[in-house]
Image (cartoon, rainbow, N blue to C red; front, side, top):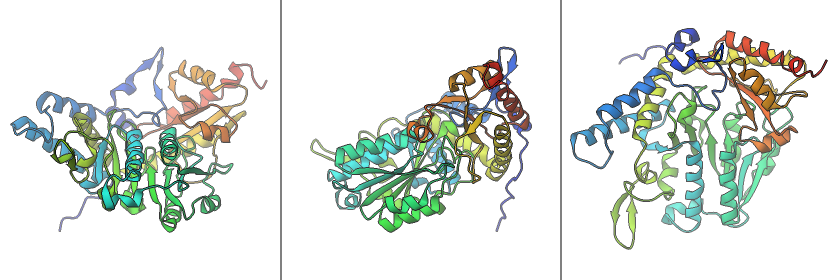
Length: 429
């Protein structure tokens, strides 16, 4: 029996930065300090090369042709599925390709809506909604895990409820126990808040949903790039993630599902490549994952995402997590020490290297421009989470987010710049 090599537990960001050509960019006279990885991560050369190699040597439609290029493209495409599924400890047939997490959540919501209309036959009846049934989200949702459920409630008569967030940004589990009830059918929540950076209590929320007989939908966009992720071990029914946040290309993502759940869900998009038999009066559909993959697939993007997860595996997700945990402490401790800074969700909980904050007396967009003039890229605005910002009495915040290629020196440069914001704008003197 072959023993697997030990996983790396430390990383040197300076050694990795040579793999990311864009990090050599200068903004005016300043070197780029990229602290917007939660919005979109940078791509290592291996990911770019993988896409280019496919497009220049094997580009063809998958699952459709019998010629040599088509066979090679199909093999590469399915090898990519196996690699990305393995990254989250799933079987290949449990991974559906999507254009991103937003598409994945909409797929789930519309599939449930189709089940409510009677599509999918007896197996899909478990998902059908009746007026008054409950759909539950949290106050910390990205709009992509909120609006699809609002729309599903509007179409079916289901009732959308939310679990509140405490003042420190943590999920109110006591309230969750009362919000999730006997008629709750879906509980959808983020693994990590894209505003607060807090790792949410998956086990507790899954247990509450299980007790109610509800299915769980996990938004893993902000955990997949930063934490070792074992979706079957988390015991969620469905989960989504986006490639562009985890070193991969745009327009590619994954929908993970428990085998029994995917097998019972009716399709959302229909057309070519997801059928077995078609007549002028009806059609029979393939099993998952192909049932949910109608039309031309994002082949080069899938191959690029596979290269991204292989890169992350080579670095070691334990090492990524340890490095970013140290960055998070440096980032949050530094912001805490600057007068006039208010951190959103400042709980001492498990977190990723992300912090959103308000500068007293200075609008977030002005802060962003001040930092950009010094080569520091951050996100400003509501980060597609308006309800959560209202919870904290704000319309916008500044968000700094790190990744495996971020250095201590970059965090320090950012903190030094933030410490000068209020003085520059003549506030707090």
